[in-house]
Image (cartoon, rainbow, N blue to C red; front, side, top):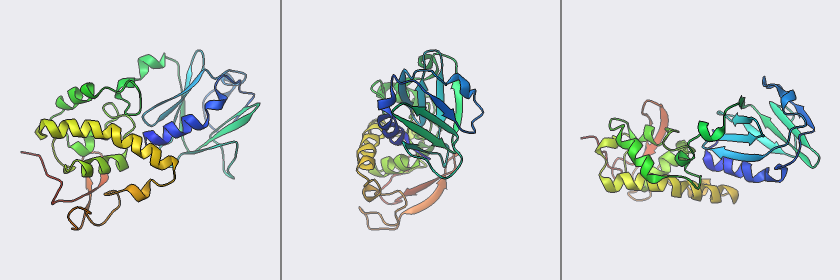
Length: 244
């Protein structure tokens, strides 16, 4: 599943189509495709894992789910979910969920919750976390209403970086650890972005899919954790469990 930084890369890759009119629409998506035809794109935006194609009176939301993908000025030999053609090129989306948002997206999306957005607000994130004291931090980081854009890779790397066990309870974190959790969710997301742009993301992983703790030289634990039941990779020796 793409994480927030990957959607930012997509937004940058298609920004040359901003202001252009769609001259052809293809694909097997169930939305009213004719509504897009001859319509001009006002802006491309991202919120967490959502890619947003903004028109004057509506927005097309694309969610890549687990296996979604896209190509710019290219096509795959497989069914297109939504293909948009412009005078200067095309964008093709595959295996994703697509729907039209009629409302003002500024009313739909809380930009201050998006770790990649200029409006990101650490204080709001901390306030939200304090209202969920019984939540495991592994679930908290994946809660999009708090950390839009954070996925499982970022979760594992942030918790390893700040030395916190994934099954710790948010309400038991010391203030310094709570602040570090929120700060590093954003910091690591932007590092993720740069590493992915340079095709070197995996070489920077310290915990995700790894077998040995580079700090302790002990085996890392691999376990399905939290109510979201996602894979966690962590060191029981240096990642402290805050649950009492």
